[in-house]
Length: 274
Image 1 (spheres, one colour):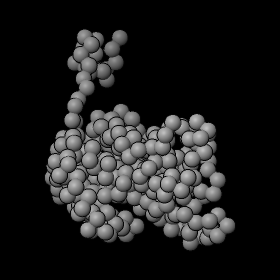
Image 2 (cartoon, rainbow, N blue to C red):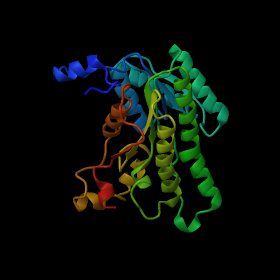
Image 3 (cartoon, helix red, strand yellow):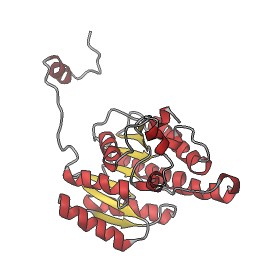
Image 4 (cartoon, rainbow, N blue to C red):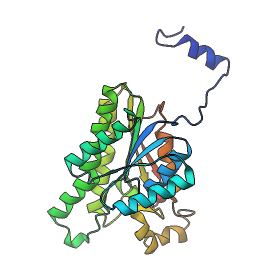
């Protein structure tokens, strides 16, 4: 017996083994990438350009660096990178990100948010102010922007996905990481709340949690040798690359994504040994 909710055309397509795998489904789609001029963010922007998407790369304040990244990526991958400036801890900046992205073509089809701060403070010297600043940078700013972008898309009945960036430290337990890991762990629960809140709507929300990667905020820790023992013990085969993270995010940005409220670890298995 067929459910009354089953599309007969879809059912017939599946029964006749006519499966659909769409290529370049992000072509001409506007994707907001706060932190898109950094090491990990720029890699995703490059991937989006290669698919014909329209990335809007946000950066905090370094205009000259942002312009350099923009021109370099455009010359290598074609297309146009749109830039928007502002610190997402500022409510007016969050509004500007939303407005300027929406003005590119009149619509926003997705977002991947790379903003954050490594919040490196010795555990012995950790203060309430340190924790507050870390929560503002690593939790409050990205979550409020995701909420605003999601509401913007739902109001316009736009189908798409939002991807928030956490960290393996927000999933696994790493000593001396309280100031950074706690807000990154909170990102996971915020994702699930938004996903449930918007369940059945046009917007899905997921999290990608990178591990020890040779670009982005983990780069200095990798270069310092902090994670060498995981390689020496055979816990991971190599450190992460920007492309590993970009591909994971791209998977979740699929407009017809059927995944929501989930966390995708991109750590080579490091948290299994943490």
